[in-house]
Length: 304
Image 1 (cartoon, rainbow, N blue to C red):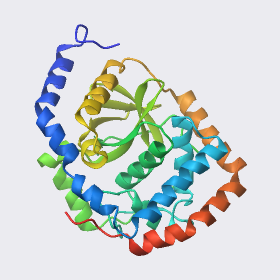
Image 2: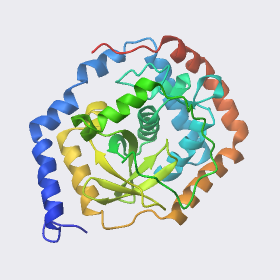
Image 3: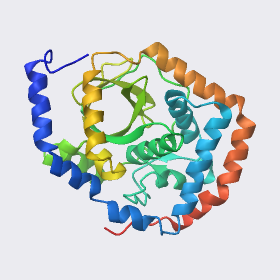
Image 4: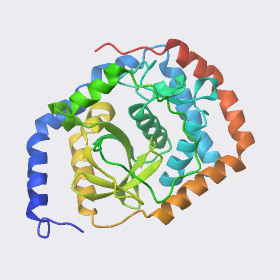
């Protein structure tokens, strides 16, 4: 366990710098910033239909036995990329044609077009409804870093390779502006076995927290710097919980929670449960189709 007594000078400096930025008033400001919008979105036409999808998804996971947080997240990822939550039973990774309601970012998954922000929020929302501790969290992955994995799950993603000139230019500009500090990726923070780990439903991978606000992908040397502002802004985490997450993550960062063998087992189990219960899952998609149609028809941006 990492403590104040045994942490390195570099770790102390990182921690001090972090709390200089995330001082109490800033944390409270971030966590309460969208409170009004969070209330107003509940009155929007799409919201109850989206809530129905989340509730029925959590119920499905219970029915098929995907109840521990890791198996549940792997099962969600399989269902996600096989279109079971989406219009026309199809999900495409694409920047274009998204609504991006910033209070309910996961709702774009239902419309069938999503990116990491939408996927992570959707996964975290279902896990919380299942009674698990899960949050969306920002991250910065070095865009020049080539990440190769020891293991890849048997899940096929549909990725739109067409990136507009403006999107390419924006990505490059971000690297030379203060925006790089807020991250270029979004993942899900999950608590399991007393420690927080990272689930990446977009990359189909998991990561251990291995240093102060840093995570390393399991079965890879690829890493990411964690940027928790999204957790505050989108999930409204309060100051006490925020500090608990930060300190617990760091204190246990010298303990390897996940390894490649366990990640393979988690994915294999999640995929097996889905394939074993295919009829039940097909019925689930048929049951939520009216909700999917209404979310797709009525989803709108929240007024800021």
